[in-house]
Length: 192
Length: 192
Image 1: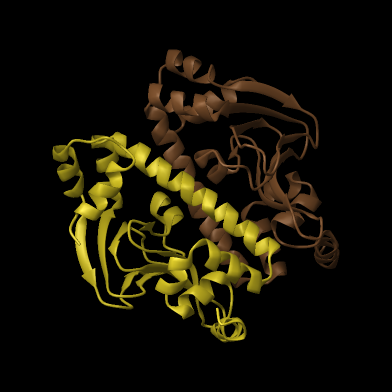
Image 2: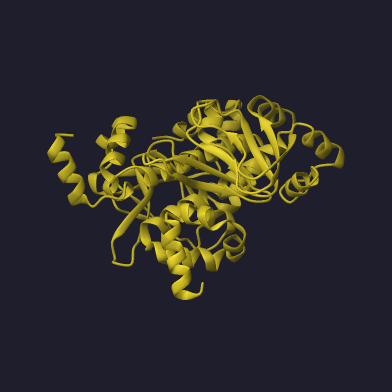
């Protein structure tokens, strides 16, 4: 992965010259991570916003029984952090971890502010991304409140078949609110 | 309510002249609604974004048993619509309804595009709003996945005491995933 994954993604939302895109890319740091590396720790300052160039990240917390619970994941071209903690510069309420070997671009809060001040067009890019992400979160809350866990799995599988192939089963199970055992059972019963 | 609620709110995020704010306000239509009026219907085109000047709106759907389920609500200075359907101009997955007598500013999708094109500074305003809303939705998903329904009620009450006073009990119960009967029981047991 080069910085092109990011600049190509930005170009699908806003018009920028190659020079501007190169300057924008320079605000980001590139990191290559192994599977299960930690990028953000709960209760620590949340100073980084992550863009997945390759691989998969998850946003999770540890529940009262000590289980990891996946609240969100992110694959190529998705953004991830604890957005509330990042925006308010409060301690994080989540962990961020690589689900698999990943290549990630990150930007600090102060650089993010500089980037937006220097390239106001990037406001449109992030506005579009967050508008969509918020809308999708409301749809997810509807699903949780409307369907059985089995139905949630099938609707998710029909809508995003590539994710079901792509994301490890234990992450997907946690994201959909299923135990890994329950998900195995659903899949076994239906050859899903 | 005048258009000032909106322009005052915008001013807390971005610098604009009084002339610009007056022009921005002219993109919006003002409506006064009674309690329980419908502003958006599921499966119909989602062409409006709503700003609550006074009162309270809810975003809800009808579940498979015919019950109204509140996915989100909005009080003064909050924005509400089916954001995914609005952005993609797809049929709505939700209804929007007034919870109480409300004064609302609305903007159509085409006017919203014009507004953002004519006043690019508004991208920053909406980027900030959606970034926060998405972050809050992730926190809500964490709560749902981490706490018992009773704990969710108490944590919500401690964090947002004014909402518990303000929002009708049946809406709050639905938003928190409780039955109205269960919420009455919690409140009775603890004099909450």
